[in-house]
Length: 91
Length: 186
Image (cartoon, rainbow over the protein chains, first blue to last red):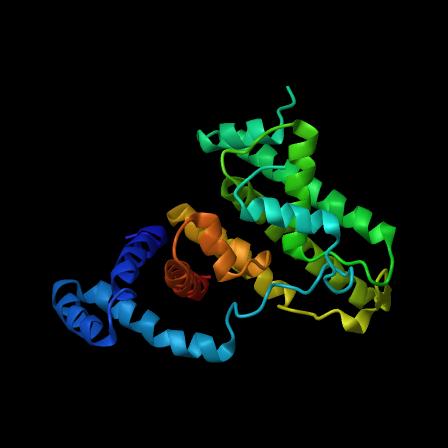
């Protein structure tokens, strides 16, 4: 299995795992460990890593600050664009 | 033949790789141009956040080309990937200026007021991981571009995608875990 195939398989399993309550997930994982042990091990490791990612702040803040232009004041023109976009309309 | 950005989006959506490359180059140029104009306009209280920059690009392109995009989400998804490139280039430039000892004063005043954010090397690794993720699930990669690189909130993204905020949060968790897994391999 290639890296992208594994990633796709893990993505499909995460779709199921993340929608379950903790109790439901444990039951589901127990079955997966029997039916697909290799994938289950990968998934177990990923889910276990989530708390560590939280504590490390992985992707928790924006990439870089404002693009050296100061601090975000928006002018009337931009507010108008935001209003139009919020309505689903077009300028 | 020069195609408009709207035409390039349409062609890229149909699977034309060359059109997609042209599209990202055109959007990058648009975003970079707006950012540079703002920089030269100066003024201590005038700034440009990334979401504002994207909205400004949307307005400029719509007005100039007189087009309506199929959905604003479609436009923003493409523009957000270009924004990722722009952000990484700015981070590289910032690093180069620091190395050269020229990084003291910016158009907005004192450099130290600008947060450093994520180190350039990590951004470059993340960029490569996002390419891999996009090959598996393009929407997840777009979500990371829009939230992490462009600053859209989960509420805004839910509205943009016509889904619940809970769905966006679930997708974000998934994207983050898959990126973590990809980075482990790199």
